View (cartoon, rainbow, N blue to C red):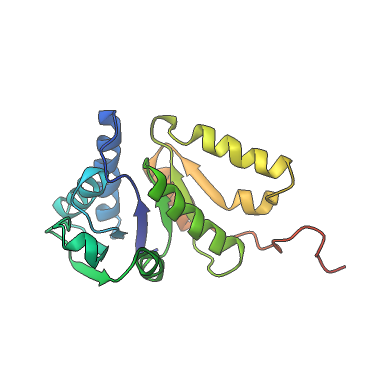
Length: 193
């Protein structure tokens, strides 16, 4: 895994532990020689993570729509900045540049981004790992809800099993580097006999 896309908050959140986790992950990515691919912004956890990567000697690659770049939100220390026209293009470009995906604490955008790439994996459009960096149990309720989607017959156990999670960034990266996706048809009742 040469690059990881991290989806995370453009705000810092209420706990200093979120920023500390971003710094920890940033240092770890740099130490392992894994490029950071992310939304390109300098604010919130996004900026904290990118700064940590760069300060530790790593590479941060940003993908930013022009309308956000015009607001001068781009992080100045990027090794590469890809300017795109829309949020849709942003996600597609980040996916193209990345060997895996991590969701750190964040809001609606973070959730939308991680679930889109998780869905692409479920549909067989990529075989890249998707993980949740579960800082302070931030994703506990969501992970429990994902288990509920399995018991209710909306997500297959194999697809749920493809979604990795850990509160330890090193353990999460280890799981991602060893990831072998469970391949199974998406739709119930359409399996070939």
